[in-house]
Image (cartoon, rainbow, N blue to C red):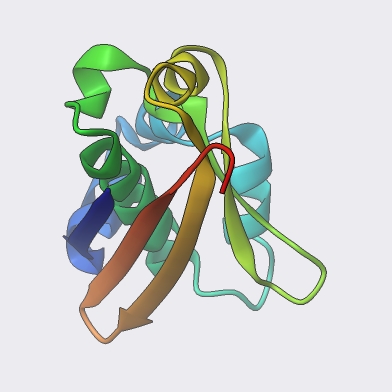
Length: 127
């Protein structure tokens, strides 16, 4: 199963810069994601928007409305030492994937100008 999502960076920036920005960050992103995206020299809003898109694309690849089936923090985008992203599932999202015999996800993130994008491909168990 494949999932694709696009997010306007300005939409994420507006929410984060609002009075409810900290609540939004804690509800959507893990502490590790927040730390990674807000490090100095990074593309803060673009990185957060791309991760938001990744979480939504994982939900699409699972074939569920992820916000009704699991918390967005149950889907975590982590990066290796070279910056390559991967998806780590927790709690309900992990249970959803296991129930569908999904071992993991291949993921690609990108941002260009006003938009951030993510595509996730579910990897079946045993393959």
